[in-house]
Image (cartoon, rainbow over all chains, first blue to last red; front, top):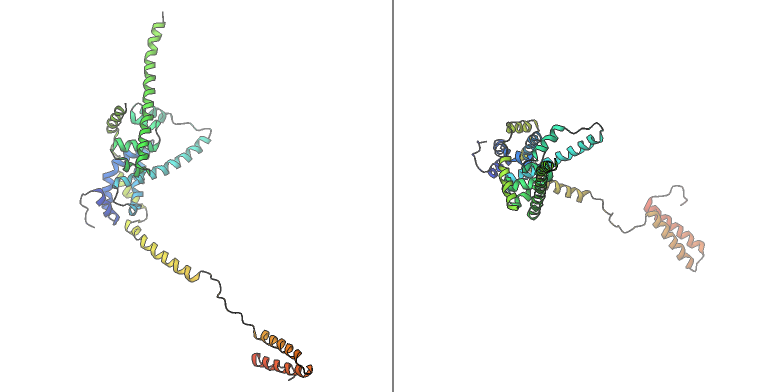
Length: 199
Length: 127
């Protein structure tokens, strides 16, 4: 087959559907960064996001026949990735239930520390306090500037449901930011109080 | 507040954006090569295979589906017919104003003739 010309993803996807692996290779190169960042918002570690990125591309190749070009290729790809991440999450939950049942289970302190450091920035806080779908919706909306309808397509929800989800996610974030600010204000006042009380 | 938060989400998203780790395309290619050939083209034939399969299934179901046996008007078997004719003959003979023995003889002879015609001669019976 001829070498595919650089063109839009949907045309490349059509060529890949006809069996052109080179076109699919171009799609992988083109979308790996976006997909990796999307998955970073859904999973806890960079290693897992990388592995899931690969897994999602493999799944996408296998399911390429189901892609229809009325949606952007990346939208369909993210939906495939979401399903891969959900499967992985299910497996992880089962494993962690088994691990918690084990009395010798001890959570990794390094991971806990990095999670605490992460919560210093807004997206780190989002990873801490929002669920997977809310994080994904937030990322796709603010990080990738996708319309609600496309986000709904990725998450399997309606555009209205996505808007509601975004509203709730923002409200939860605002609530946590406010609480954090109150806590830091209180901790800033505490030494001064101690100074005034001391003789 | 909402606009502040939205602006922060946007600006921090730009900072949050990371480069994909190197080697993903190669890893994907290797995984696809390890996996059995699942070309998109082969999968696209599925709708035709599905239609053909459905048509074959419909044909088999139509051909081999168990049906009620066709209702055939019940016809008495030959011996039953002979017995019935004998019974009718006896009834007829009973109504006749003639000695029963003659009629009986005639009747038995008729019945035997009838039976011989239908089933073949009875070897051990007197003629």
